[in-house]
Structures are given as structure tokens and as C-alpha cells.
Image (cartoon, rainbow, N blue to C red; front, side, top):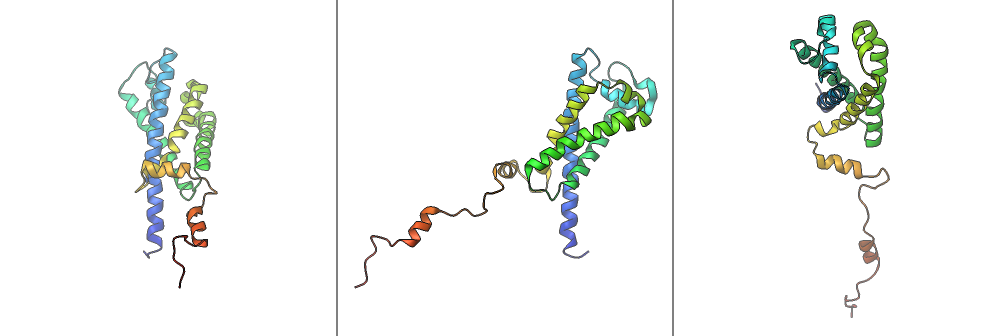
Length: 197
């Protein structure tokens, strides 16, 4: 492998791993929201995970409360949404503008929701498509997107300070701003400087 290919491969791997982490964090926040929303509607906190577990256990997974099959639903959620995060991060790995990253990370999960819950899950997981609460699920995907948009924090060498600096820097800001005081000082002579005799 030549020297030019190595940094490119490392950047791709770093973006993919950062997306996996960002996607997993986003999925956990999304599942937390699903649980609170389900509890508010007097259903089990684990309703969403049990619905996803129906992919493996059929209607036997649809039960109130936590059970052994809930682990399968939780694992499936984390696998799918971590992978989605990796895919989105790979797509955005060369994007420098934070606003565009946030917009894509909000729009892509909504597109994923409509492609899966309204179409794909009707074929593969019909109980999920039939029984999921639509509005809380859409909002959950937006929550996922907000947390996924922070995936650059998980890039190698990234810190919260560098991410904040990237957010605060305007696109028209120059890399090395000029100092007007030093410019004026260079054009004018120093009054204390002695004139040559």
C-alpha cells in the first residue's frame, strides 16, 4: 500500500468508526425517548424493543415488560442504527460545513424512517410497521439525527474544543486575520525613533 493510500484509508476507517459510535449514542437516546413516550401512554417502557424482537420471535415477543427476547430487539436496533450512522458519516467525511452535516443528519434518519417503517418493515417486520406509534417514532428519529450530527467528536484526535471552534468559525472568516494596529504601525514611523544625523 503506497503512502497516499494509507492516509485516505485511515480517514475512511476513522469516519466509519466515528459514525458507528455516533449512531449508537443516537440510537440509545432515541430508545430512551421511545421508552418515555410508551410509559407516558401507559405501555411498557420496552415496547419498541419488543416490537423489533418480533423479527426473531414473531408475535411471542409482543409482551408487556422486559423479557429475554427484549435483548434481541435492543441488539437489532443498535446494529441497524449504528450501521446507518457509519454510512452517513462515510458520506459526510469530507464535508467541512457544520450546518450541512446537521441538515443531512436530520434529513437522512427521516428518510430512513419512511423507507423502512412505511415500506420495508411491512415486508420483513410487519408487526413493527403495524403497531409502532407514528409521531413519537418520527420525533425519535430526529433525536437520533441530532446526536448523530456530533459524530466528528469521535474522530481520532477530535476534542470538544475543536468541534466548538468549528461551529463558531464563519465560512468567510480568514485563516490568518490581519492586525490593523500592526499594519498601521508598519506604515508610519515611530515618533521616538531618532532621525539620522
